[in-house]
Image (tube, rainbow, N blue to C red):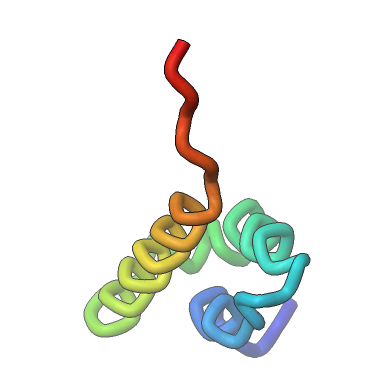
Length: 69
């Protein structure tokens, strides 16, 4: 188990890496995250939500627009 919290691990990832999404998924589906997320609060919770918001924006910008049917 890592000595860093899942949030600290997430924030350290290189977002330009081709493995970024796989690494994020590995954290979010891991047992350590499942335990951590039950007690996260305060500033850590705010930072976590901001991280997820930024990641969602990046993913949505990378998607190509839907073509009309």
